[in-house]
Structures are given as C-alpha cells and as structure tokens.
Image (cartoon, rainbow, N blue to C red; front, side, top):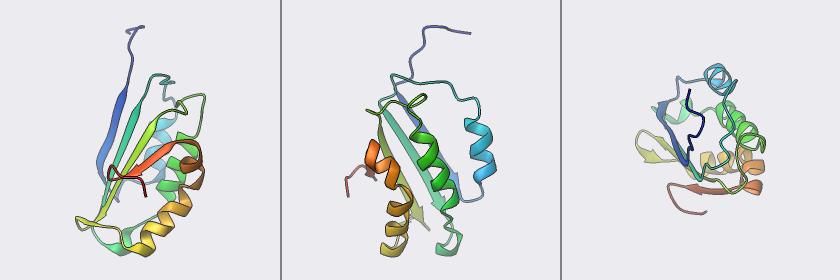
Length: 115
C-alpha cells in the first residue's frame, strides 16, 4: 500500500436514489483521513420528486463534518437533480436545512454556485 499518496479531489457519483443510507454507512466506515482534500463533489439523481429522500443527506452532513477525516477547508459541491431538472424550491430548502451543519463548517456550493 502506498504511504505517500495525497487525495486532493473526490467525486462521488453520479448516484441514483437507490443508493441508501446503509450503502453510505458501509462505504465510509473505514474511510481514511484525507487532510489534503480540497474539493468533494456529490452528484445525485432522483427519477421523481417523490423519490427525494433526506436520510442520505443527513448522513453526508454528519460524516463530512468529521474533522478527524475531512479538512475544514474542503469545498463541497452538491449536484442534485430530479428528472435532470434542478430541485424545486421546496426540496432545495429542505436540503439546505439538512445540510445546515455542513454549510456552517465548510464552503458548500450547489452546482458550482453559492446560494
């Protein structure tokens, strides 16, 4: 195993709504510290508005705020779409509420823009 590797950018996705909380819990269970990570992009697509589920976003909010694993200076770009369209205002506000802790401790953008 390489000892001197340095991960600076990570993209998760595109993922579908079928990827649930248990998948993410298992995926991040033994995730190594990434002190040099500068940018993390999460791409998530939902086939319908009814499929939107906040539980995986609650998991991301809690996991990505772990400063023992992810640096505070990391930029997080969230790219969420329903049927290839941006989230409705209602869903976007719900997502903002779920990501409150993450938005308070990291630079969070949505589709590359601060909102």
